[in-house]
Amino acid sequence: MKHFDISVLDLAPVKLGKTIHDTFQDSLSLANFAENLNYKRFWLAEHHNMESIASSATSVLIGYIANGTKKIRVGSGGIMLPNHSSLVIAEQFGTLESLFPGRIDLGVGRAPGTDGLTAQALGRNPAIINEQFPRQILELQKYFSAENSNALVRAIPGEGLDIPMYILGSSTDSAWLAAELGLPYAFAGHFAPEQMGTAFKIYREHFEPSKYLDKPFVLACVNGVAAETSEEAHFLSTTLFQAFINIIRNDRKPFPAPVEDMDAIWSAMEKSMVLQKLKFSFIGNQNEIAEQIKNFQEKYQVDELMINSHIYDHQKRLESYEIIRRAKNSLAG
Picture (cartoon, rainbow, N blue to C red):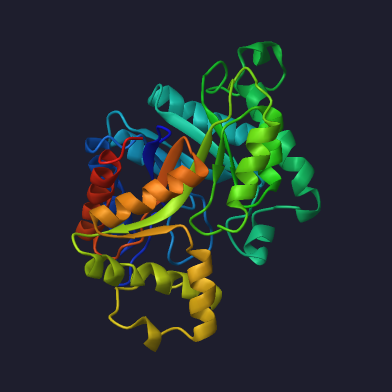
């Protein structure tokens, strides 16, 4: 089996009955826990106008997590680049890298991370996104380069710093771009599984080596809900299922506690839609998780597996990541 690392994706989930302050404390607790378990990196994702997700000021939250940890890499999974000025992002991540040298990642995506009305409030122009996003990546590379020191517009902090950049995707569009630019590619399999295999194939077959990367690097994000018993894991996973029903229903309320009977909540059509969207969800006890990871890795041969875990109880969430780590350790890769 191909060697792979494991990492954490955190959306800073807001739980029903908890405050956003609680959410941020839980995120830092999880980052410390993951660091002690030797997870490779801890990424936060930009979302807006969602009562259930508190990671809208992603760069600020990255600083909070990096300041409270010692060695784990911390970054964005990702910054939704067309929501921002390239210069501002270069300065923000230049500041982060200067504060926490050698520990900051910049994952960038083109999606809004929100609904259409909020995207408009963020100043996005959907008519130019497909040309704007690649241009902004090149602008970031320019701002981070030492050669930009003679330019009229410079990123300080940022200039001359080695900040790894990852291109995120949930379809095949960004696979072509990541391959063309010779950058690592991360796919959002935790909510958009349909085109993942095709996207990886496009990226690997069309990859052009660059000064940043000499061969393809593939990261897949999946959902993970692990517990000591299979029954408990499936019970805990009902929080994840309910969260996706809320997305389907356009109900952005905080993440709910698990329930005994999902059939009392979702319709047959909703169930089918949710299970399709959560195709890449590893749910079970340690042995079951190990088998699911093994089957996934044999098929997709990723360089890194990033785990997103929507579990209501914080202690159970920590235990889930510990069980997933043990499951991964039991495999050869």
